[in-house]
Image (cartoon, rainbow, N blue to C red; front, side, top):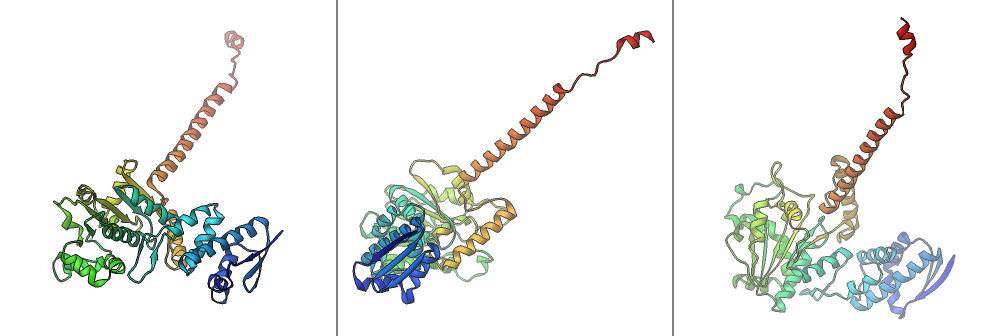
Length: 372
């Protein structure tokens, strides 16, 4: 058993960090169960050595975060606990200090999970980045935030946002208007992210001048996209032909981000997803990165992570496939299982042969046979 007393650097920090009615403190105790006595700006911790030390480290990280942003969210608390428990506490500082962009309302955008940090760094380093994982992991928002930063910094001349014209249960042919008007409602998440970065009026001006373009994927055909930050959303609903067409639009001084969720494919029949095929074909190529998100990266309501995990378990049970596991890992798992199965079969065959040789030979009494 260990006892330690944590004192906040300033008295007024305790209340916002611990939360209203110490709600934030209760979240930490749920994850790191130990005895905690709160008195003003001090916390007395008592419990298992490792847990008390981890609790202390979480509090240190939350103090650092509060100094940086003057606000603490439940998501950030759970992330801090998760990172400390997994021995990755040193990454928290780099995550909290990494300001991707600032919204029109002055909110700093930073990675909220380890997966988001990997994703953001990957976009910065690579020409093409695939963001693959469940809904609610911030793939689209972070990509747009980075695109806005590149545009403001004049690293690119325009932003192009696109997605395929396919949606579950919708027949676009029955909707009024031309193709762009039919698809615009489905591009709303992209518009929302842009409005957060630039404001509605600025977005409208940029679109009129062609600096920002939001269009269905079909409009990309036959073009070369240079000096642009290009984002393809809902890529799981592309066909292999569409994905190849999109990737080959890449021009000089451009970046591409392709986001998708393999569990939400709306293509008709048994049509192969262009996202899945691209992952098979392009993994390992220099300049192209595959970033895989998990339920741990979900930044919506905590219940969303539980819902995603429940569906993943159901899918694995139903099909034997984990759609959120990288395809390379699935192949390795399959190869390992096959190797074990082959080894078992080989051993069984060897045993049978050995048994045949070990069986005593039945000798025939030839003397009796000759006397007959």
